Length: 134
Image 1: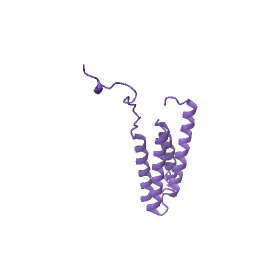
Image 2: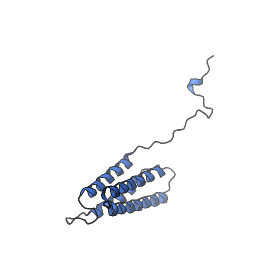
Image 3: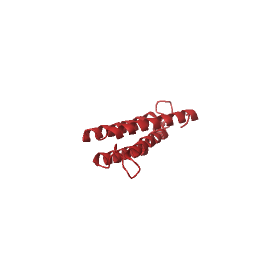
Image 4: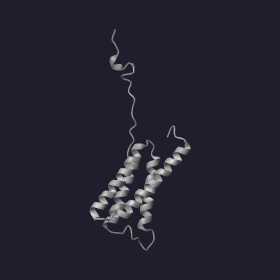
């Protein structure tokens, strides 16, 4: 997060939250269309969104905000009251969508970050292997 201003962090977080809400709404609407294929396409879309946000940003907070938007919209579309929902039913496609999206989101947040390491081989720094003997 070095070098990011507070305004940039807020705007990036809001954009990630909005993207998560859009992807979650799309997933909730189309997950049961032609059951196995619609669910597969929607889970691939969720995976691509998580990978895209995670790849474009070195910090974790955009992935977290995108996950909040995605899972929040899925929970709202699944229905939180006793009456249930007409968009995400408690059947095989609905449970597979909620479970698969949860696994993808948790994996995307927990995936380790590998920062590039700088090596001094070509910069004139003497390495211990090349010390001349008298």
